[in-house]
Length: 309
Image 1 (tube, one colour):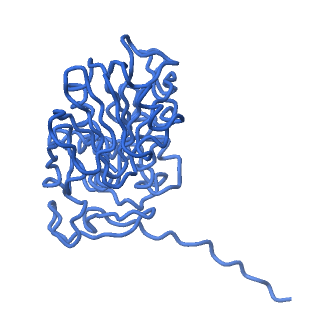
Image 2: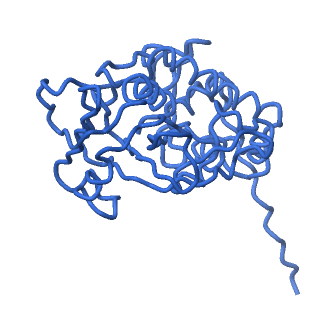
Image 3: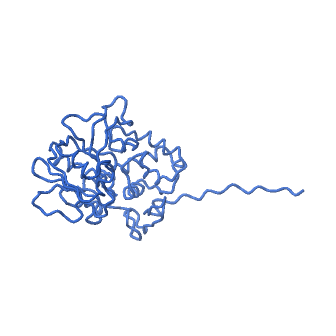
């Protein structure tokens, strides 16, 4: 699944090429792309026809387009796009033949088309009601988010994100720190790739428990994740194949700069030790055994002695 940098690259492309345009017509192929919409493909096409795209929004890995002429408010609708493993949003001329696995074509008022392509058909599109963001700072600007995203925590790039409060929550739990990085209700946007990169940057092993790290250490880890994702944004995201591209069909090239993920057996860029891999929370995790020493196994409780009668 694309992580925060990849989704943000797509969002920026939509902001440039789709925001401010009207959807003159919408067409969907098959039923899977609109399976999350109560009215199915036909109902979604009818609802989108004539709607104006006001803004392109994102929280973590989640993407949506607000619909309407003014600032979005609670109770209004948004087009939510779930990219999942292989979903793509491309802006193309209607004259260009549609690529294989094109499941949606939205004709925009400037003559271009917004196309949704998904090889594995895990992704889908639907409209949802916007609700007030429960994570917005009380003194900050009001924000609305799709109802299904309201439980997702702010990501490290949002004004509402509180790094110390998040670090304190992570320290309060006897849970492996990598599993916490991947938990979208704690902080959103980080997936397996950038979790491994952040842990390598901060010199922390993913199996260390949050409760066994200092607050300063956890803050440094979160800041490392933000720094890594910021660099990935500059490189257009991480692409290993043609499944992730931006709205123009171009791949990102941050894969060339990865220090940990996918580098099993290769020398650590920092110390030269061969990189290792193990499973943490069911996810393949890459790390340097020298720079990121594994935590010592905690001794179990001594067995009770039984007195002889």
